[in-house]
Image (tube, rainbow, N blue to C red):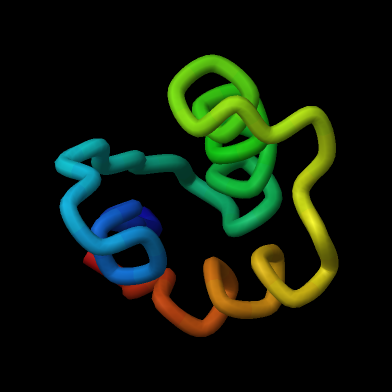
Length: 57
């Protein structure tokens, strides 16, 4: 199982995500970024930062 806390990349954001795979987290984060951070696209550098912050639980 993998876990990501958005606050690790976007200070102040309390959203967290869990998935069996990193790709599952990336998909969920993309939806979250659009809905809660008004991002129409997630830049590659943000995806890289998210991947670095994903931990195994």
